[in-house]
Length: 231
Image (tube, rainbow, N blue to C red; front, top):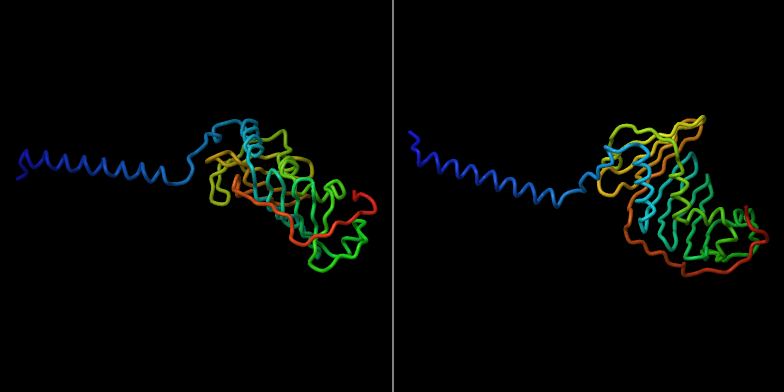
């Protein structure tokens, strides 16, 4: 038969176990993933505005876009960017440090860009950003984020998971395509992904926000002139 003393000791042990469990849970919660940022309860326009502010304040991002046979893979920082653009059978490697642009591609593409100089193998071309602005723009963080987040009228959709992170869906419906933007619902409200469906299709994933990125000039480069600015 359980005495009163035994009952009290059992209750104390039970209470201690509950306290220990709660303490462990609190520690684990502190060590785990980011907590929710509250945007899931906000309006579509408020979520969009928050994502633009978060993106603009980040020092760097990894951007990966696919659209048909076009693939753009860039690491973008405040002072520059590096990566490559694949166009069907052509691959253009690009690096920008400040106002200097480096490019490495095929002789055929060089000719299309108005570059007629003979380039040694495995050598980068060095030229001002203003010479080939349409390519240099792919290395510009503000321009790329502005292109992706240039949306106005959006509607709020469901809460889902993108690349393992909880996100809120925003949609912009136009005549020829629908743009869906996914904004992180945990941590900072960074844009995580944009998806285009309809007559225009493609997907851009944004990751590694604010992680350190080092953009350096290539070891072998040669300065060249372009016969006329490429447009």
